[in-house]
Length: 483
Image (cartoon, rainbow, N blue to C red; front, side, top):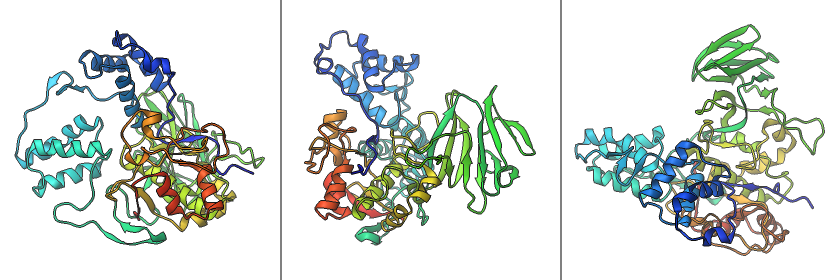
């Protein structure tokens, strides 16, 4: 029997198991163990600035034990980071934080730097708007109040709360699949969902070649149109000397701005220089995609990324975590988990990429995605996924998507996030549950969240519906239809 999910670990991160001796080691000379802790969490040696950051936290007494140090590193890894900001012990880059002020105008100005201090990242536009709206309508009137409110939401792993602020009520109505219809902060109400950004692959600056089965535009930055190419016309984009070099059919220019290749009339884009051959269907290469192909250099100026930007529901059609032949209720559960996972990283973490500018990748580090070619091969998935379109798993308040990590198979029980990742975060992932339909003798994947083999078995053998499956593996969630 074909395993319903590719036997891979999918989710926030796959963390390395530390030997018992490492956790039991004496805590003396912790400064000398910073590199050891970093390697355990990130599987590489720290760069100079990373070493300075973590060493500083140890020297200042913020992390007094090896366990605490590694736990903090795991926390940042789950956010797609290798370190935080320069803020430690009430300072920002070694300078005292500005004194509080109670004027609304000053509070609005302070929103951005305060958010960066608390979250260690820039807020999204929707997050800035949400906090500034609460200040404008006098729900928050002091810097102390703003700091406490942000700290509260940070503890819930969200950048903002629901839309029910300033006397407004969140939009709630009945929706598909028995889920509540509700507007969710940060998620578009477009019928095909938000635009998500999937990191496909990267080069060291060497040319990425793209074409299309129809007409498409070459854009510099967000909107400046530099040219329009026709069917099968090829454009190549490379990076060197601080510039993008664009060459193609009647096109030749250099620019410092990222390049976006935008299809017209729903044309399908093809990355000719990308190879992902099918092991099941000889001759198939998974290099065709719906939506926009963006080519941009990473923030570290080391990798030139090809990013596929498309609506969430179109993204799910190319999801290759299953063959599409499994029980309908299993496929529905997988759809909701996969949809929630990508939107969680778009809305809550701001994307798993530190440097690349994408929300998640197309690999087993996140969710295997093979684009339009896979959509053609597995048409049943699109039909089943459409039955639960727009439905996501949220926290108990129903206003924030959660991290619906899942994995291939267990040894008979799942693991809690505390047990595997040594974190008390993610309350919906803090229970180990029996997994009676397992086929493995050991965990295949991180074993946290939903077991694909288990979900398949519950649907096929026990007749469970998708709601029961999801509520079994993710405790205390609320299923809502966000669009």
